[in-house]
Length: 134
Image (cartoon, rainbow, N blue to C red; front, side):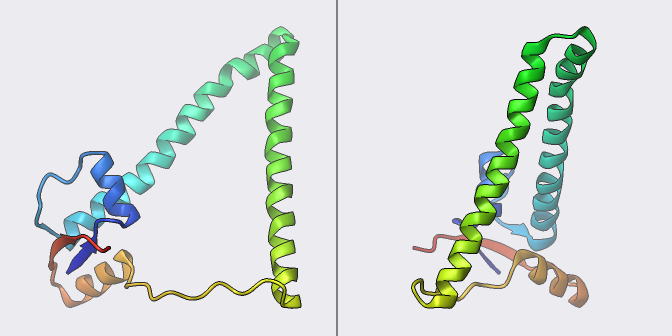
């Protein structure tokens, strides 16, 4: 089985220096990807929660600077969501009117998950070769 070196999961594991073996099985590789893809968001969520503790404490203490920063952050999130939905609606309208072309579908290889599921069903873990696709 071939895995492209330009795929997001290869680059993620490469950045984290988790590709110790050049020839891995699909099963080991899949669980490394799942562990890092699930663990990283959970760690980020925990860090962001710990980072908000001073904000909540400032509400108790009555410090208006932290309150203003917190309200400003909420406004930025709301404006970003509004801008994203506005742009998406505009693109959909332009596609419907014919002023914007639909994106061309490009052939995509099977996903890592579907290949792992197939290997699990067949009770075989193929060896992975990492290839450059240019």
